[in-house]
Image (tube, rainbow, N blue to C red):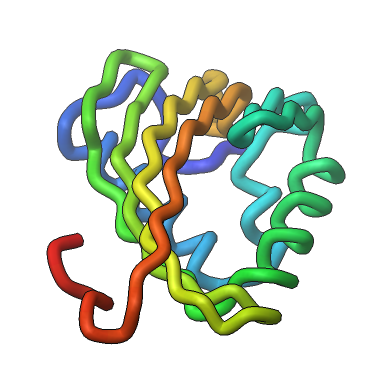
Amino acid sequence: MQRFPIPPYTADTALAKVRAVENDWNTRDPDIVAHGYSLDCVWRNRKEVFHGREAIKFLVKRKWATASHCQPDQEVWAFTANRISVRLKSEWQHVETGQWFRSHVNEHWEFDADGFITRRDSSANDIPIFAPGRFVGL
């Protein structure tokens, strides 16, 4: 099975791949999100490292249990034949406290020949924001 578009990436196919990943995340369905990653994917998310699709599902479920109204906006930062780096920004609300945050994230993805992400490295900063500052200057 393949997950299109597949490597090697061009400017157009790298952008299409980023949109496909973004669309998966916007479903808020952990099974759909995890399906974009290889069975043995290594996922570094901030200070944690996860291995495999089941661990990815766990992380996604945990994230969405505390963060609501989150929709990532991703742009291609750079790409090579089988790697894509993205700049991601999003605003989200902490479920328990109601506090809004703006996250700025850099992610680096490496793909196998079938178009599945085999490695994901993510670094992020979360900045508390208040109602007047929401959706401004993303």
